Length: 518
Image 1 (cartoon, helix red, strand yellow):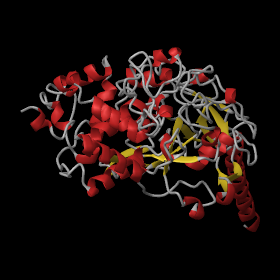
Image 2: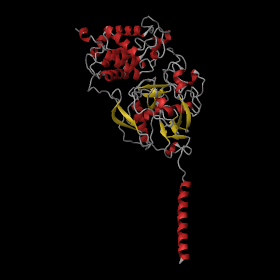
Image 3: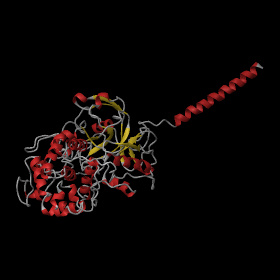
């Protein structure tokens, strides 16, 4: 009897061990997926490069701190117009300078994209490949009244890089260097505003994404060409409280981080891998673009032909809000309260305005507060609405964050033509055959305010903004109008659109419009 029980027990133990051996070996046959087994490159809708995990010294000077970053994939280049056309063909909203030939070139980085639009592109791209979207629209509003997108950090889909991921990738494995390729900078390495108002060099505005020097990870345009949106809210003091492992940025804020510098950056300083800047998430500009990252969370095929994008996806595409006028802000446009609101707007949307960073001719460096004060002073003197002058600056030169005329204190590009650059440098005075420059902003603003009272503009102002802009610009430039409209909407909640009001657009341009038309 004892021998029989012993035999049964031995048999059961053998079966259990055999079953356990099988279970162990099934995992040996299928090793767990890690960054080390993930392919070096990922080919979905766009080529991505794997960035290895590791620690690095982030920041520069007194702000340096060590951060550990998990492995992830990042786009080889910023999103180009060719990449973005796929989104548009599926029903996506076009970028804001879509019809400007000097921007819209196949291998130029797409610009004119606000943060929410970039996040929507990420969600669409995720759905095209059957991944879980990383962003969800919430009922919360940002500082300027636009719906906030919330990040689901557990999602396996595409998203914007965190600020730490961006800098880690930009450094290309180099330790505490200033640029993606090292410490030596040459003008031919990256596209920035070395022209300072003159047409010189190889690049005019944007440059093809692969025309500049890449880093050791094989990434292009981590320095210059376009600023790139990051996932994080911006906090000037965030580094002092940043986690050491995969920091995700502050939980809330007014503005989002942008990195990398751009074609409008006035010196290589802004193109360093550690330079930080920001912009309101609802802002789009001539020199802001983006690239995507994808977390390494599951098996990823190495070959492009193994990815079959979904031909049709259900997606509620992002639309730029053209109106939210339920609660207009009835501020006197010359009041101190208005000046404070205008200064806050300029601060949040246009921190890279040239005049906040360096003197130009006789124009000293000024602050957003001083800029708002100057605009209101001049506009009050000449009975112009301050938002009109501000809007012209935003439309023409990204509020002096890019474009040539800003170097001659003419950020409104008033009576300015690029073709006249061939006739010689701008002059302080001249006729229609030369470009005009001003010694400081006040003189430029006053000349503009006087000129806008010319009869030809006054007559056009009796109709709508669309007709007025055709007279002022000389050709159809829809984005010129929409950018102007955005300021009236965001700052005062006032509706001023191409065909609204249908008549007497001058009432929102001139503060003495009624007396002018008696």
